[in-house]
Image (cartoon, rainbow, N blue to C red):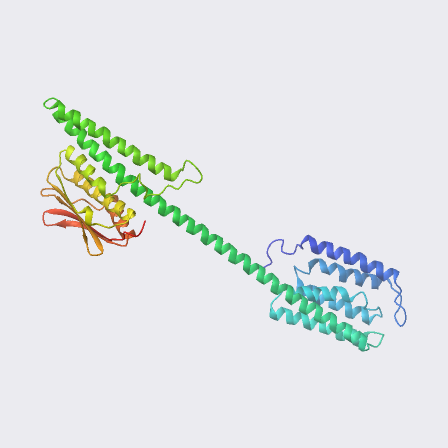
Length: 387
């Protein structure tokens, strides 16, 4: 494969290592006499030491090339009669680097290169290698290979930990995004149900007031009063939503199920608003027998509110019947709208909101035409012990 651009550039640490090793080996070679049976340092010897040290600059960029080069320098210095005392260090550092960076096969090649260098040193060196020298060479070989492998293992473990941390951070970010999206969807549903119902009722009541303004000004004034009441209630709902989005204090706990949100006792007021708009709303409630959580009560209220809003929007006459009862461990809510002569409402945001609310409570939801009426049926578990 082609070499990536600038892949040959070494890191700064290796440049400093190679330069420092170059200076140290040249100084030691020129100032420390080798003694018999070796000859004194010459220009060629200094050049071999310098090349071997400079090779370390690319030890991480081209580790196999460097180990072969430093091993060759070591064998060549033994062949010309120069002592390996200083020449061996670049080779051991190169072997350590190969074991710390490369896989199994390249490490095997590096070990063969280092072993060949040791063999060439034993065969060509002017001094006979005794037990002390062999023990030293073996210790250096083990230190380079075992130390490099340990460094590789630690680096691999650290990289794996970083990858796990990155994956966990990404998963936490995705979870946070999902939570935010779900909260936004819930808040959008709350605004749609509350404000949509209020606006529809206000429009209908305003229409009634306009039609009877000349003939029945008293009724028109009552309708305007209902519009004011409904509008103030809608503003309260909007303020409550804004408190959830932007709490007044950092420690404020503003929940959807608190006292500012509607419950089943508010259905009577809802019926009054609808009747003031000129539609008949029949309530069949057994509130004393119903045991349901505050969240479940809010869900049922929103379902009634949205179903009634749809009835007002899509039909102009006919009764709307709301029945609420508890059947065993379930609470059953049924809203029936007489829609003779009108088309069934299309599936829209309102029906989707109702379905999602009921499913979140672990219940079941149905909506569709039944005979000449449109029925909305919601059944949720009765769980009075939950908040």
